[in-house]
Image 1 (tube, helix red, strand yellow):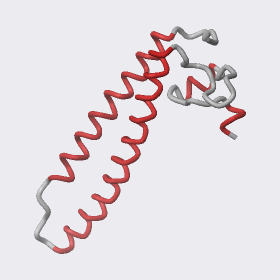
Image 2: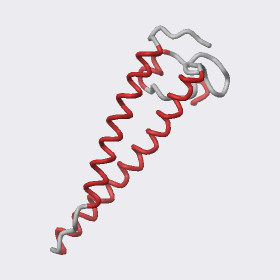
Image 3: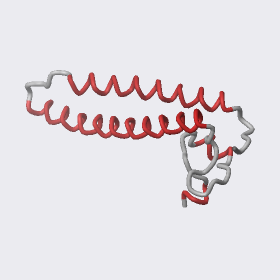
Image 4: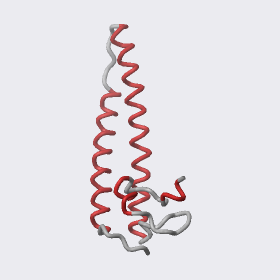
Length: 109
């Protein structure tokens, strides 16, 4: 296991906070999508466009939630911070930006 300067507990807290934020956002998106539609045709067209944006936001959040869940699993397994492809250490700067990334910068490119 590669030693990280930032403690795993801090990394885990960041991931859990982001997970909570995304779950709240998803709940808001679902609530908005479940809202009754407007009867006015012009307003309905605008609402449909908004729904498409909300759906895309929801899909993006679900994808990030899966990545976070995988990162939390790597923490539990003791493999967090090691590249899933080559085994090298994932740089602290990369983990600061993408705390759920499974690969180092070299393998990502």
